[in-house]
Length: 412
Image (cartoon, rainbow, N blue to C red; front, side, top):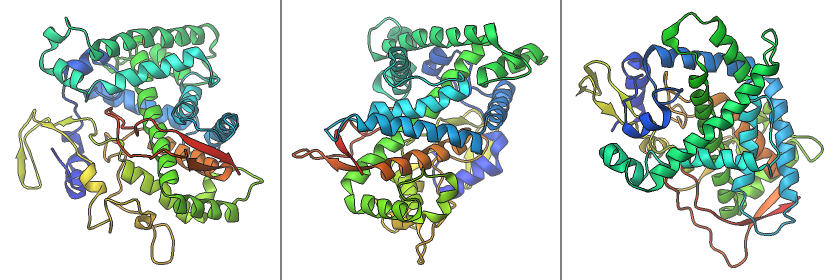
């Protein structure tokens, strides 16, 4: 295992080319067949990642055009929550639907209604897939793949979910092929189909099969992480009502109730921005970032890491470094504020990891977290259900969510 910000920077930034490869595990091979964006390596991975980053940028990640799409989804989300009329409810599904719709817009070119049956099925399939790699069933499959292939269990559920998810995406690809305009791409699928036609690099593997797995990875990485962080955020706001009240007071003073929050408001909302960062730090949803593998003998922090050795990056100790965070095991937004109450940027705050393998959707996630969270705080006060005690236990998944909980959303 590798941890400590200094060691992360040495390995994944200064020695980035040595630690870009992923090791091969039976579970990941069975799920992705050596394709996609997350568990692949080498020339194919570099070309697929380059294409994904440039395409996301083309469709507005970090720009005003995508901000408007997120703001529209914020309105849909708030309208949906209002229908609960302040009664106890679990916000998880609505948060997943809202965040997933942003990825749907980028990949498919359209959004889904929150009650769409196929939309819910897609979310379930992705959840099944993400739970497997670090579960007991996934670890058993990695140790005994031949035997486990013959036995029932949750690993079979995940494999079946991948088989069911692929036709869903194939149908979207089919629709795109029927009506796309090569001179006016609408989304990631259109751009990928264009790349298939014009790419002469066979080793880059721009194929329809790879498009399916890249789309799955974009949904998995771009939906679960952000929606789970928002889920933790609501849980923390209910658990720490004094923090929620201070966030709402700042939003009321800077934005009011007559307009939606904008990305430009960040500099004027230092406390709210600090709270969002503290939610990410304490939730620490990616306890283990996907493993790396050294492609040659190398020393990191004075220790020899031989070629082919698997390295497991561990974020938790970095985000709980007592030298950076005065109360590392407590929820304390002051960790990200200076003595004047201004937002304090921390170099070692790396929830998206660092280097060439850092999350390609970091900019998108930052936009979503800020706009969704501030919109929710602007429109609702979140309260506990009378007689129920909230806990902060975590589910076991690639992206750790809080265990299911119920709260009340009172319109403001």
